[in-house]
Length: 179
Ligand SMILES: C[S@@+](CC[C@H](N)C(=O)[O-])C[C@H]1O[C@@H](n2cnc3c(N)ncnc32)[C@H](O)[C@@H]1O
Image 1: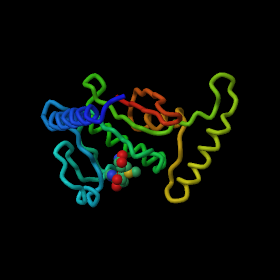
Image 2: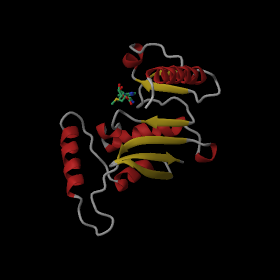
Image 3: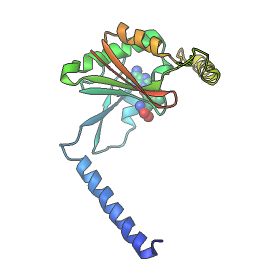
Image 4: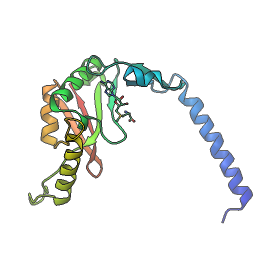
């Protein structure tokens, strides 16, 4: 068991490490990050030395970047219908270089798997989740949850040629798309 003084020393060491981490984060060798949101949202943000805030409308443009990450606390595209998803992704495509130069769009979203891959039976719980979320989305906005096939047709319509899906936590996946 650790004595009180040992744990105090450990805490001080951790605090020092954390301080070092934040100093390193603000040096130029780290990846430069920017958050992009509507003007009234950006206007309310407080200054942050590590992240730049850019104001704009993603239906008009997306700022140039090596990679665009689209994520919300949980989901982002499920608020939008297919046509709007295509418009947003077309602007993302204009913002990034091609795959050979490292360009990609990373999306964190649900990918519905209604059928069991082994025997083709229906996942009852997944179906229930999708129906519940679809109703929740349909009430305030024209969005929905999507299967892998539905996602692919949106990516193709937006002009992307490659994609990968990695399931990270249940139905939530990291989707990477490139052209
Ligand atoms: C669910 S929140 C996600 C916020 C953030 N990405 C996160 O991970 O916490 C969706 C965000 O999209 C922003 N948003 C909505 N419409 C937008 C648009 N047309 N252009 C840019 N941002 C928009 C909203 O202001 C809101 O901050």
